[in-house]
Image 1 (cartoon, rainbow over the protein chains, first blue to last red):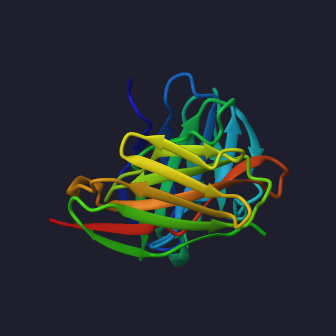
Image 2: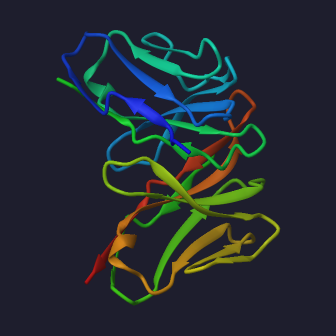
Amino acid sequence: EAGVVQSPRYKIIEKKQPVAFWCNPISGHNTLYWYRQNLGQGPELLIRYENEEAVDDSQLPKDRFSAERLKGVDSTLKIQPAELGDSAVYLCASSHSGTPGEQYFGPGTRLTVT
Amino acid sequence: GEDVEQSLFLSVREGDSSVINCTYTDSSSTYLYWYKQEPGAGLQLLTYIFSNMDMKQDQRLTVLLNKKDKHLSLRIADTQTGDSAIYFCAETSISGAGSYQLTFGKGTKLSVIP
């Protein structure tokens, strides 16, 4: 069974530029999560989807961050414009809706904003 | 608010036992989790314990839960060099949007000396 796929693995951009991350969850997992992991920290939830519906985006900085999961499978997370403080690893995870604590993580996208 | 505390570093010799400790704050957490993160990778679920249990054993892993003190520990028997990684404790909590979420600690970096 394929795991959670994310791309790109690394991205370096200048501040004020836009950036997008893509995630393909495990087949059959209807819950998808985007996390941000700062250096030396644990992951912090940005947004959670149940199928195509964002059911928890309370921690997503909506002035510059947006996300979508149009067909309830793949998802993209966008930052526009990026700021220096956005440098982090962006992790995507998925789970069955009945076992939300048993999450499967992708390898992440390491974003560096210069 | 929810907070999960872990010591940041642990160093053990190969073949010894490792004990990673965690304290959490949300007494209503129904499940508590241990995740492992290897360099450049996403998090991998190791094990979890239901809040009405005080111990769970899974091969080399033993989880102990002291619900009164809100203390969780992970013991790895016969630690191997392949166990070198960052270990995250996570509690279940209710987000600002009223939905179930995981709150992670900052992680304990385990170094295994050959």
